[in-house]
Image (cartoon, rainbow, N blue to C red; front, side, top):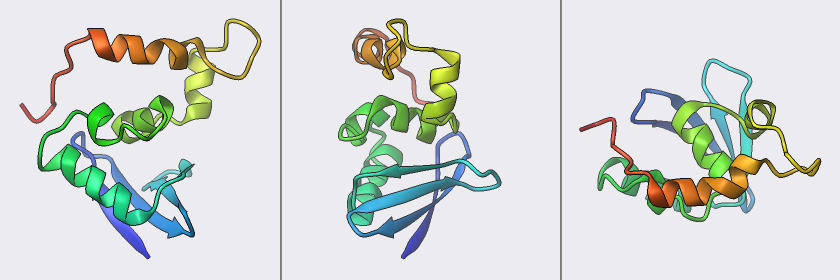
Length: 113
């Protein structure tokens, strides 16, 4: 099953369930991520984000920050690593490690406000 979801910034995604995972494809591009979530869980989280106006990190708390970034901006985890390369030569971006601290300390505004 595939569903269409539109982000608050107007990005359109096709979300297709594949077993216990979902493929999230940004429409009009070749950008795709795979998340370890069932379609019903993504749909419920999207509802919380869109309709109940929860911040993305609350609604999608089970997603990695880089996957939430993809839903917000369309930037893939691979593109994120190119923008913010690992400082220690590892595979994890410094931004991934610091993102949680950033989110806790930065007052986020909702684009729908």
